[in-house]
Image (cartoon, rainbow, N blue to C red):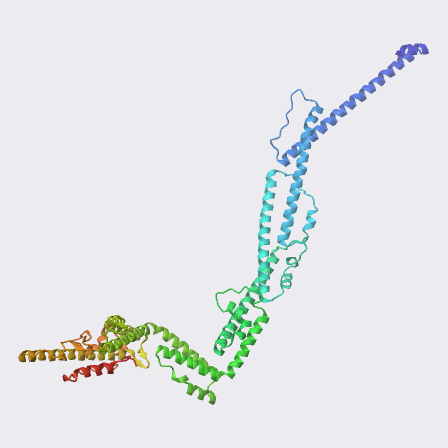
Length: 572
């Protein structure tokens, strides 16, 4: 490479020009050097500014994201700006990516919060808020993100609860509309159209206004259901009464029996679809009106029928029916028009109810009366059996009669206890109700006392008969011993008599009541019961029994005739 001096020498430049050129070269080199130095300084300043900016951004990102634990780790020898930038840039890029992700998370959560809040409050313009970006980037920490997520979960739970409540209301409205025969679509459309729309793009409205509207609709339907149930139950009750009263056949009941069976029990909740429709109610009411019109035309027949039922109840209970509604009197009242047949029928119905109530209150005593009458029948049979002269024969069934006779004796021996218990129960009944216990119009206590008196008289006569026979047998033995003759076959020992088959029939043994006096047989003998109501009632006769002696020939016939005359039920 040729040096400038040689070139200039060949050219023939002067020294002054050469020096001037050297000065220019030197100045040019200084300008280039200065430019390079300026460029290097500018680059250093630029790198420094960039480093400071990145470090500031890094610090801001770390503060925003809550990454306080992140620190720069550089060796001491690595102090150049480029090395610092090379170490900061990857961290900065990571934090930027993290920030973008965090902003996206915040935006998603915020949009969901805004959407659910709008659904709960019922705002329709919530979509406008979704287009706005997330602005608050100063605090993107995990703590704040957790708060947002907690808020979102609470709103989601509230939305779920509200949706569940809305569905419960809608289902109940649907059930009640089906029960009442109302238009479900029209009912829920009046609350909010989204409750029945099938468009999947629109969610079910869960706002407070929708919940309030559904609650009001359910309350309205429940009230209407209650009104219709009460109305229909009254109609069904009237229908059953008319059916029973008119003896309506099953064919007439069939169209209404399903509804009647569902509604009649008061504890049943009506849930069957279509049961409470206006059409059903009108049909039931029309049937009741028809039966009432029919009832009016058959009132006389119904009055006599219900009176017959009343008399049957009274007959079974042995009480006297109320004569104010006697058949003859009822017919006269109906024909004369002095009394409305419906009122007369209602009066008979009330008498039937009263008779049933009295029958129920008399049940325990009537059961004991039946037990007593059964024992009296056994007593009658036993007396007939004892008079049978062939009872010990070897005939067919004799052993069965012997067993029955033994059983009858056990029952007959219990009659006094049965009577005492029955009288005690009767007095208690009378004391409680302050009225006499009548049996077919006669006071039961009087019947029982009279029966006890007759029974004691029978026992006394039997005892006298046995004493008389014993005395006769004793006289016969003394006569036979005095004359030395043997007892004749026709004679019999004390307590036996021939039965025609060569056997000696024992005289039936009775429990002697000996010294009982008639005073003990009156109601006053139960004075310990404090029955003040019957202080003025008549007492049974206390006249002493007048017994007369009977001859030997008439003794057997008198005993037989006495048993025959006393045989039969004491109440008839």
